[in-house]
Image 1 (tube, rainbow, N blue to C red):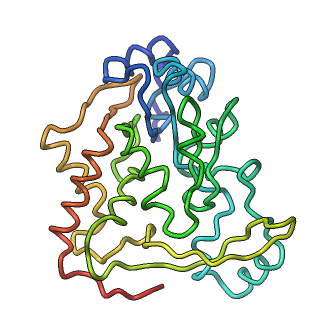
Image 2 (tube, rainbow, N blue to C red):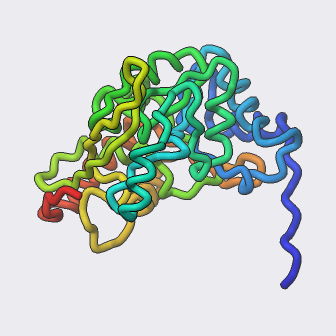
Amino acid sequence: MGERAPLPLVTHDQLVRGLTDLGLIPGQTIMLHASVRAIGWIVGGPDVVLRALLDVLTPSGTLMMYISWEDTTETMPGWSPERQAVYLAYCPPFDPFRSRAKRDWSILTEYLRTWPGAMRSANPGASVAAVGARAEWITQDHPLQYGYGPGSPLDKLCQVGGHVLLLGAPLDTITLFHHAEHMARLPHKRTVRYQVPLLRDGRRVWVEVEEYDTGDGIVDWPGGEYFPAIAQEYIAAGRARIGQVGAARSHLFEAADLDRYAVEWMERHFAGLGDGAAE
């Protein structure tokens, strides 16, 4: 097998120029999805990507990411009885200040969680980290039940005219679509229930959480995964900004407009689908 081509070198100043050309300006609220490898070999390390973003946004802006948590129990109902028993007995409670981010979503999730001044919401599975002027408001009072709907950081992103930024990340990573799944007016959306360990009054307690199915989708759609289909149609309609940041093909979406589009898309395509069965 041939050797993989070396990644292009990318500097802080190149990132700033690329982000500015894409349409980022001071004061915006940006929800980031990123593939560091797609961007290139970052001179100074992955956290330079965050530094460049925060420099463009300035202290008046806000940077946020969906980070969940490393030991999430969302899929516990499908685990073996042995694994469930061990977790129920020994899994530490979720701690917004210490529990690690789920780095499967990007190495940058943990970088942002531990950034100076970062805030983190208290819903374990739907957890969001944010830095900047609106970070406290974005992350506070995150509902435990149906944590992607009203009152969630995703809802607030739309309220303030924020944007979703994909830096080399695939179209199926747009977490905002989970808010659209919640808001779509459909009669038979699939729900899930699972338990999470929380710290209350100094004790670990297991609490049941219910939400729409963010893993397998709110319906079984014959077309397969529907997040990329929604994003591709939205882009084809000319409603996204497209550019290159470092070596990464990147997209900038207006969150509220994308959310409305996704809700309408789901209501149009999913009418009559779904059996309403709880997992």
